[in-house]
Amino acid sequence: MILVVGGIASGKRTYARSLGFADSDMSEELSSSCAVLLDAQELVRPEDMGEASLVDALAATKQVVLCQEVGSGIVPISRGEREWRDRVGSLSKALAERADAVVRMVSGIPQVLKGADWLESHGFEQRCVDEDHPAFGASFFTNRACEHFPCHEGIDERDFNCLFCYCPLYALGPDCGGNFTYTKSGRKNCKNCALPHVRENGTKLVSVHYEQLAALAHEREKAR
Image 1 (cartoon, rainbow, N blue to C red):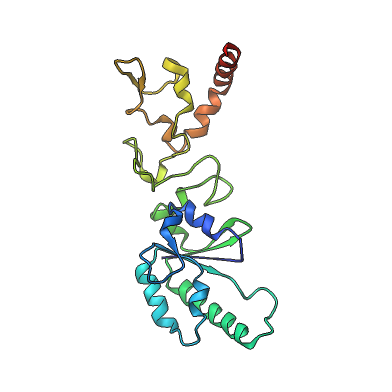
Image 2 (cartoon, rainbow, N blue to C red):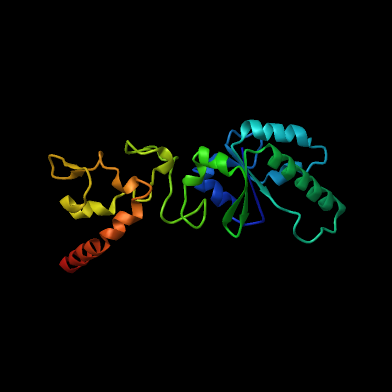
């Protein structure tokens, strides 16, 4: 189980999406079959909610639990709200102790507090990654929810880059450098080419051919 904590609108749900989960995989209901639980803090609104049984249930049925941090703001006037805040803090601590990994979101940036090795061994940190932010990025992401994933063989799934699902190099024809064949209709068949999907290639390949692609686009624009 991965516990994701953070303030309101800090990026918790976005981080869950970066792990490969869609909105349809998320629910606020403990009884739901969804893999991701939203707003775990609301589960302890009732005073009689047993913390131990709740943690057991979450650990057994959820892959990701999102919980709002509520102890860093103004102390509530209402006694009931103060007691609820304390219960949320207690729940968060219990979940963090039980979780395989704990990630705190700050202004949209994930901070791994626990379980970095576990995240790496399970491939989560590489589903959407760049050099600056260990869970978000513009040069690499993996869409495990795609019905065609992985669409090319020979690449470790943890290193499969889905950024160029539609390869920009296709337009270069025989000059793309990939392992392709031509169909009877004259179209390129790129089934056996994985160049743009290899982690360390991706943007580098496109960057190398950028001027050539830009010139081609310019020529086509002039021809319109």
